[in-house]
Length: 251
Image (cartoon, rainbow, N blue to C red; front, side):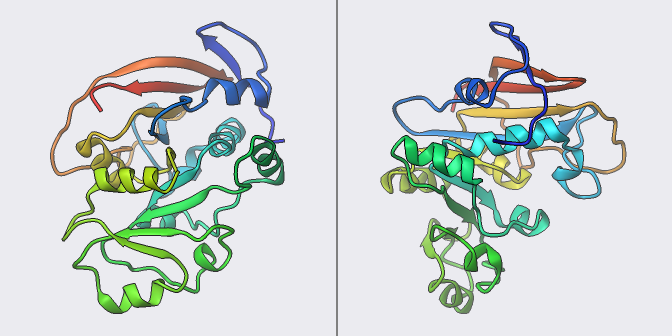
């Protein structure tokens, strides 16, 4: 099972020391339609990273939720910058998660989809070489042709716009591939673009009990403000840490 840390449900329906099965039920995708959710961690003063990495803010409870949120996903959607910064290898869930998926008639592993305008990616990296499912790379028509050619043997390279990726089309393309449960792990620029495109349905946010100060950025960045509301769906707690689930309104 995933790394254990005691997680209680504060609201709704308070309960103590939730099992993995309880937590998976709490974060389930809707049964029908396409659903795109984002997952982030942030300090209580708004920092999205420590020493430049989001993983620096997390503890055992956050890692437990991070792993569980991948269980039901058809695809994990990530920005290329986050893949480089957070040193992603080939996307692979645990053997327990793979067994859980197969028992429900799903592929053992979710796919990885990434968004990159520059295609500044190493086709020989573990991201591609160790991928159990052929990754999907969404890019733009202006991306360098030589980089596109280098990636095409190891990934599906799909053009989604001229100079900026059309994220509505990305969501539609994933749904067309049968990948309707879309789990996004950042980063802030991709999240900002997804919000601007109006394609985010939910946000899973861990509130780390720390004050970071410094110059760390927020979980979302964009050229323009795109205010939209959110409805609180659940509150989990592990010690001084909160795990919040929101439904994004207006998407």
